[in-house]
Image 1 (cartoon, helix red, strand yellow):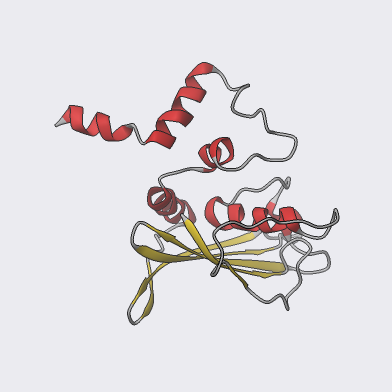
Image 2 (cartoon, one colour):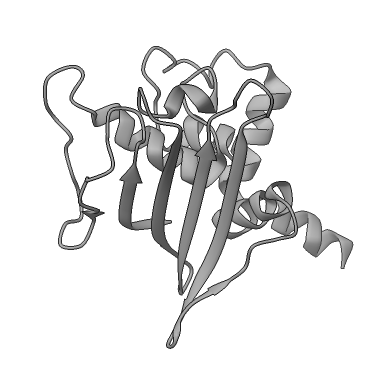
Length: 179
């Protein structure tokens, strides 16, 4: 997965007038700044867009204080395609549960076409298939979460084996053996 663009609205410390972050023009980036300036929130926005998971206790905790909804739009390239994910959340109220929205789109010469499934869970499965990686594999291979750098090493042997098999895409050999 190669990040292309990240747009946020009312996500954590970011309000509704934040210009999109474009990843064009650089190969490696360093996020630096004082504590509380939103560096980790950018990573959380990407993981929330892709997998619906962050370091927060609940999705409602991700909504900027005083706001009732949020949205993250993330564009990325995988294989030879360009994709866009739009994930939204409306805060839970006294008489209703929080409302999640998840859209998956693929770029075509005429614009973005929907790949969204019939449910959030079905769309999430499609995203994981495109990425060939779930959240646990990501945080155990590509991202070391603050205060959780030993996440992989403390897993039981069977779970470590699964993470490594996912990273190396060993399921390909299972398919070949079945043939």
